[in-house]
Image (tube, rainbow, N blue to C red):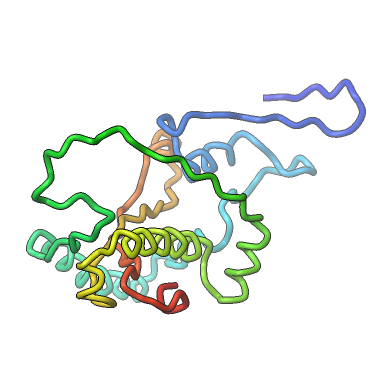
Length: 203
């Protein structure tokens, strides 16, 4: 790709690609072979250091990684026998699995929250941006359950079980360009802390 700038100043080239074709991490890997740095030098690594694996292939690091993976492997195997989430008012009870949606909905518009404020908040608390977002969603679900006078939440309080799937991307460190656009994601089941009354504990 080449931009011919016939005007004054810098040009901006914008790519819009459907998520069905690729994800952000795979696309970044692809673009690392298409673009260069501002001085024309080749881009060594498109990924920030936080996403690059610290395991360099030594025997010690690989053994340490395997020891960490073994307990996780058995936790995944036992997932089918684990108890389900509690039937809070936000979800659809299992007894009403065939209930037809009424189609009645109410759209509530909120004022946008500046991203800079959210970033300052997460930096001050020493958490990630995902932590802030999930806490906000969890708080909204909790407020809804309280509004609906959810008996499950009232009875179980902090012990109420409500989990969500967070998808985590794994950077493709291989040199095979034919594998660049393959999605490598894993869904991690996380507790959103629905039962906590203190928002900091929820966070």
